[in-house]
Length: 140
Length: 140
Length: 140
Image (cartoon, rainbow over all chains, first blue to last red; front, side, top):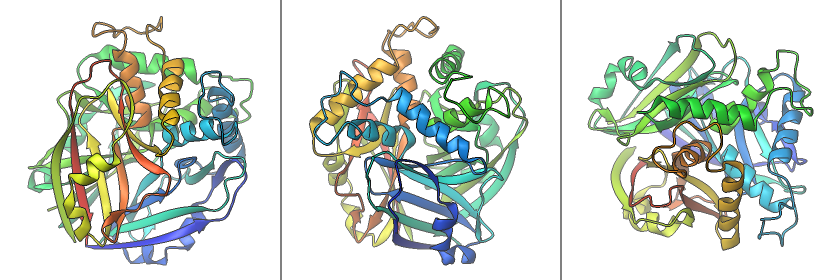
């Protein structure tokens, strides 16, 4: 059983939901050596998040952005934390609802995702800048 | 320290929230051999999900279904992804909000759940069909 | 590669979101011995939860409480599970939306959190009492 960890940086993305499966896999060639295990992906930020969802139709990602903007609006009258801009407090809420990490099974050297599953990087700020991830692989 | 992985299929369920703790435990007799560790349960789909919640009163699961239908309605005017039916885009959103995996501690050969915790399989499609899970156990 | 598990109790907290990063780290001095790994934190309850978010400004935690109370109101007309008080069913929903566990990378003997990330204990009941956590560390 081995464990292996590395930090990578995701390029700055526009606010919204982005498919990053290949971008992540490319950076961990060690995946091929693991017969069975888990890949843990962690984002070191509190206003961006990670989730798994449909990997084929880009309108799904557009609808995610519309839905979260509608249900977690900017400038809600009860927000007190507003000094960093109207997109900041909604970004914190979206990040906790979607989550800051993913754990994905590794089987025979590959991520064992369903046919329609892809990794979404969710940028909730208007200008989030590059984002740091910690990847931890474990398995045998 | 060992790691062990297997894929299982959950029978097709009606749209809604279903308690599947025993159904999962039955399929991993190896649990008994692990003194301390983790069970990772992963669903290979983007319109069904997994969560932990109250295991006793079935009305909790009914209220989950009512609440998610109310807050993530079908036919929202801003949905663009609608070719697979009005239940499809809400299903994707519910799946990401609830999440596609669970990690549960194993202690002395058993899942170390709280007294009132059970594993919910959350079927968000009207006709989702059988669903595939990957179970990964690790521990010593 | 080692694995280590312990159960701890969080003191009873008021309903709301509480920063507990130091309270947790203090209870696992073994963290220092792990070069690379993961800390899994699990809450054995279905009406309290764990999340990671902003660790500096307390109004973020106040806004979390306001937002979840607004979007998951007590006494929703469709709730059937109401015998344990009007705060009970919303607590179950909040717990599943935020989640019952966290997995955080460990690097060089420390939690590898971002500068602004802290561990939130989220008490969703009016009187939740002390809450039990299971901590599982693994790594080398």
